[in-house]
Amino acid sequence: MHGRSPRGGGFSNDHGDRGDGMGPGGPGGRGRGGPGERAERVFGRGDLPLIVLALIEISPRHGYEIIKAIEERCGGAYAPSPGAVYPTLTLLEEQDQVTSSDSGNGKKRYTITEQGSAYLLENRAQVDGILARLDMFARMQARRALPERVHQAMHTLKHALLLNKSNWNDAEAERVSALLEQAANAIADGQPTE
Image (cartoon, rainbow, N blue to C red):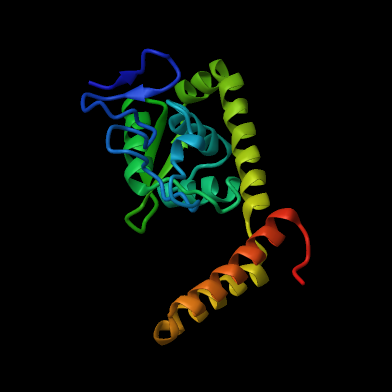
């Protein structure tokens, strides 16, 4: 039996999954942040069904197109997994909020129903809030992105350290540590190295 979550905005099922990719198994998406970056920062409880429904309202879509649209909305920094999106589409279909049709290539194309449109209208403030959060997330990720030149310099440094395997004596370790600490402090302080 499927139904709305107690909060009213999301969906739940008998397995305890929340329908938004954030169930007991952890994040359902492939966030591109660093270690510890979790998808909960992108979607809250019940957000994924609403954003999926809102995207389908704009135009009928395949599941893959929904994943790509969310990824684009997040500035490429996050995309929900198929394991989160396709069960959400199934829930929406079971609740008569979307219908699906075979688009001829074995893929289902989803279209919003009158019931789905009415549900979105009832929850328009929440949908607008989700979209605003996705926009903020995309802007935040864009600010965090390192320029390609800096990214390449980091890789060069890593390789230089890995290639220096045979020269690690106490004096060399001290010299390299001092250089790295000096560079780190200069970067953090925004000052040029000498």
